[in-house]
Length: 157
Image (cartoon, rainbow, N blue to C red; front, side, top):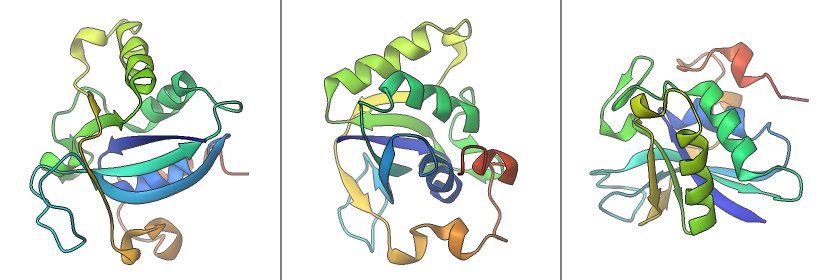
């Protein structure tokens, strides 16, 4: 298994979507690349993200990027839907250089590459979110999510 971290705005919808993808074996709501290292915070500079473990024999990083771009606005800085702030920025983080290279190549191959503001950075640190945020849309399907429910469930089997 391999691990990559996707930041796509509020982590609730991102986790609900990513966990349905072929080849994804585990997801966890968390925060990446900020200051602090506890559940209580502070969360200065962190991006809400989803730790994503996947089987590279089933799904390649390039395909995960394709899926990720289905649920984000790649041109928006620090905002996805109604959620605004630095923690809602988009990004792809990993400890594996090959993941970052695949993400960068995916972006550069797009015709709109010059407009895309998705961060692609090494994972500096990661903090797991509190239990109440894990699989939040399963527990509370009526809460606001910037990703339309049809899209969240697009790959659900």
